[in-house]
Length: 194
Image (tube, rainbow, N blue to C red; front, side, top):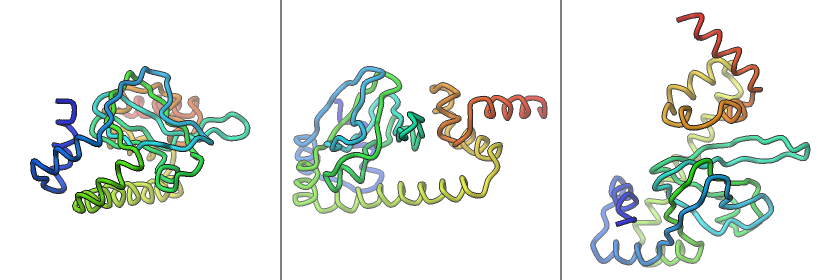
């Protein structure tokens, strides 16, 4: 069953009855994307919030000079969406691109509203997920303002080892807000310290 990972994930937060599970599953869109495709691009309205079954995505902002600024990655059992665009149904600030062939469980805005009305505990569940994401975002801002590039890299490497193995180093550098050359220098320095 394609929805089993999602139901297991939700069960960590709230317990659903069989009837509630069935209703939730009736609102699901299951979709596979190929590496390189986009879920949403800047300026488009983000139509879905998505649970990653398998694969990897990057959420990034492209500035006026064509420079990519990676905000986050998403892998199995994580959520991905341009939340501001999805919640407000306004043009997206971010692009979400698939770095690997990826399987998603997707919910439209209308489906989410229907789920909230019919299963109130899901509103609590999604509130908890959004709170965790907000806290992680705030902590990342503090790290970016207060840590050295080396310490930011070490934090990323320790916190997300399963991501670092799957993405090119220039994307790690973009996420950290440094150049790929500076990241190479940091990694060489760390190797010489071992």
